[in-house]
Length: 408
Image 1 (cartoon, rainbow, N blue to C red):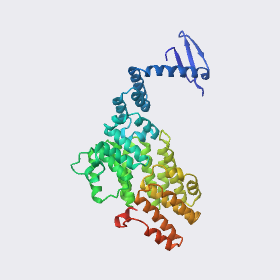
Image 2 (image 1 turned 30 degrees about the vertical axis):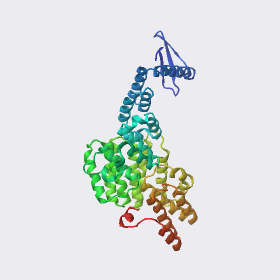
Image 3 (image 1 turned 90 degrees about the vertical axis):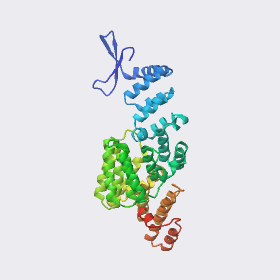
Image 4 (image 1 turned 135 degrees about the vertical axis):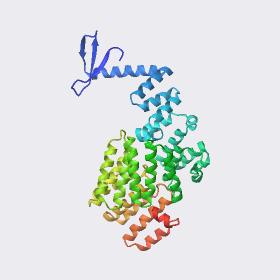
């Protein structure tokens, strides 16, 4: 720093500034005596330099060089260097920025781009749409795509047509969005989607991993666990190569969930341990994912004969949990274990109350509402309330054919 002040920590738990006088004499002072004025001086100097484009540019470059992309991006944005901010955003993850830096940083960075500027960039529009999906606002995500790419952006046949005009990145994002929309995939559509993976080079680990992640959700819905495990391993390979612990966490979570569905508690416990390890490597706070991990571990314990952790989770965490981002297969998993635990260890009334709490979630999603009603019907049947169960199941406003049954 200007003025000859250095900060040093020599075998002590406290930091001591060393003031060099004339290059010979050293005076060691307690950090608490100098840190306040020093911080104020640095902040004043930074504020002064941020007032000029050249100074702000230099500070942003320094942030980027020292691995602080969020500060670099927001500094560029403060002085209107949006092209440089976008370049740094892409370098720091682009569409996958949220998985490396967290929702708060993602929101802050996206808010710094003017609407008119963001509208011109495909990657920013897709990032804003992903932000909306993670907030549970599917309709806004659809509107963002339509405003930027036209109404055809929400037409599945047009997007995935053989001579489509949409980029491979857009099509992969639209595939992911179909999962959030709880779209019912046909075999023909899935075959078309598998052609997409060939458009990405082998080292495009984030895009390849996310493709397999989306396919994983499809196979889990159909209870095709052998195929699901295969694509889970492929997704994990790519996410580990990309050093993306947040995304690796989701794969282990799904693998543990599949093991529980198959009754393999040992495998479920192994994958739960791996998901916990990945979550511990995430460099930002992610409360709802911590709840997902807690739910998974409680379900493993439940299968091992200990109901108390799951009961505690359902009583203390479920309200916050239900307002977070949850994929369809994880919602079904929660309904299955939650309803069963409440009915077995508490009462039929408690189980029905638990399910009713979920009815307000995705209230316009008829498939999800039917899923809740089916779980309630099963609980009523187990309690020998056959007439009520029949009434509840007859109320499901959907056509129950072979494909619907396979996916629910």
